[in-house]
Structures are given as structure tokens and as C-alpha cells.
Amino acid sequence: MPHSARRSMATVRARYTGETLQQAQAGIARGARNHGLDTCAPRQHALRAFLALAVYNRNSEGAPPRWWGAHTITAYTIHVSARFDDCVIFTDTPWNVAHYFLSRQAEEYVVPGLRAVCACLDHYRLLHVPTGAVLTIRGEGTYEDQRTCAEPCPGSIHERYLSVGNPLTAAEESELDTVPPASQSAQVLLAGLFTRTVLSAPDRSWTTGGWYYAPPGVRSAIPYQYSGSRMLWGSGDHWMLRWTGFPNAEFIASALTDETIGLAGATAEPSGNDLVVRYGDTELRLVEYHRHLLGSTPLILSKVRQE
Ligand SMILES: [Zn+2]
Image 1 (tube, helix red, strand yellow):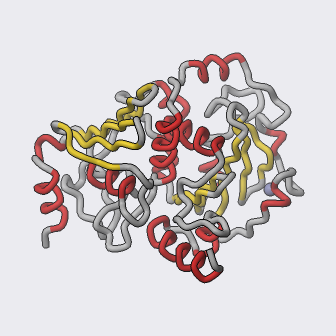
Image 2 (image 1 turned 180 degrees about the vertical axis):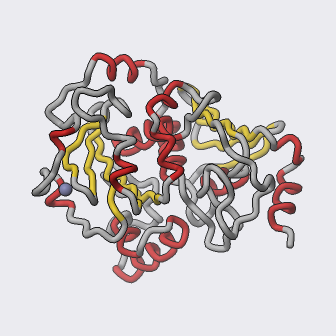
């Protein structure tokens, strides 16, 4: 892709993701012809699918990964910048967000298998041992230099945490063994869900931002409905995301299937009271508890878009 075409693709991507132009460009390979959210090394698909389980299980309705605590990151102002071999979470509070992923030495793990490579106040580079993939948490506006962060930067306090020299603990291995296997296409779909945790249409007709209530400028079919619990679980090709309140199921489906920013090949259609997103042989059932009270997708969208 010529430089100008890559730049214009990055401009489009940034309007949806909340990235800066530079951040979005870092996620689009030279010569690529797509937005890059799903174009990554296989180990990144595996890591992002795993992170989806970490983030999309919460409170009493959640599957066991709710105990890892990583779901709390959706209460922070974040946006995800998907790169070919890195997944960067940008936030104005990197220290706070990182501590939902990083385990301190001599403490119980937080998210099993993550190890600190570099831990500075404004950026944290983590390695996920089971997949070998990198997760980065970075402060907004900080200078990105991938070369230096492959090794600890000067002043890094990574040794306060479980770092790359620490093997998996027995507790971590036990917890990782309980994570159900995902097929290859399920990994891509769940990874796409994680990458789209905070995504908004430029016209605000849908958004996945605000997993507790609708963000400003976005109409919800069920205003002020607090999302207390959520669950993402399944196995092989069959997965379910279940929650209460915002976002509307149609918004999640839009993020995954939008013709501009969606996962290429993913489709969505109603199934009873739910929406089902399909990708390859995989299906992800979207179950929002109140959807049956509101009726059909056309009714919900007309309510969201009225006025
Ligand atoms: Zn660093």
C-alpha cells in the first residue's frame, strides 16, 4: 500500500478506535489493504482471545476468570491499539491499568501467565508465557520506542513483579488448565472482540465503549441500565457472551461485522431473543438480558436512533 493509502486507512481506523493517527499507522503493515485490527501473528490471536476471557467475565454471573480482576480495566479510559505482534492498551492511568495484569513477587497471580519485561511509570511491557505474545500498557502521549522496550528500560522496576525469569507457578498452571480450548476461528473471533472492547462508529450510531453505561452522545435502548455482571465462556467453536444493559447487543454485533472496521468474514443474525455472530465455523451468541423486553432488532435500532 502506498504511503498515502496507508495513512488514509489509518485515518479511518483512528476514527473508530480512538487511536492517534500515529498509533493507528503502527497497526497497519506496509502493503496491507485493511485496517489491521485482525491482522496479526497467531500468538497475538491466542493472547487476545485469552484476554477476552479475562476482561469479559465479571461478578456473580461471570465464569471463573472473573477472579483475575482484569474486567476492571473497562472502568478506565482506555483504547486498544492492535499491532501485528503487540497489543497496546493506551490509557491516561497506565500504572492503575497495568496492575490488573501484573502480579507482584510473592503474591498470588493476577492474570495467570503474564510476566513483566519492562515496568516504568508510563509504560509496561508484558510477556504472556503460554502464548509468547506481548501485551503493552502505555500512557497516552508517551513516546513509543519498540527497540528499547524489548529489554528493560533504564529505571524499570520489573523485578518487583513476576518477571520473565519466573516460571509459571503451580497455581497459574492449574488456572490455565481450566481455560477451555478455542478453535482457530474462535481465537480470531474472540481476539476481534477484545480488540474492539472500546470502539465507536464515527457517527456514534453504535459503540462498545462504556461497559457500564452509554457514553455521552450515544443513545442506549435501555438508558441508565448498569452492567453489573458479564460472562464470556464456551469451548471449541461455541461461545456465549452474556451481560445486562449497555452496550446493546446490536452494538457488539456492529463492531464485529461493520463493513469498514469489522472482522472480515464475520456475520450476525438474530436467533430467538439473541444475536449470533458467526466467523468460519465459530458462533458467538450475544445474550443481553433485557433484549427480549425490547423486541426485534429493527425496534431496538429505531428506539436508539429516534430523535
Ligand atoms: Zn520500557
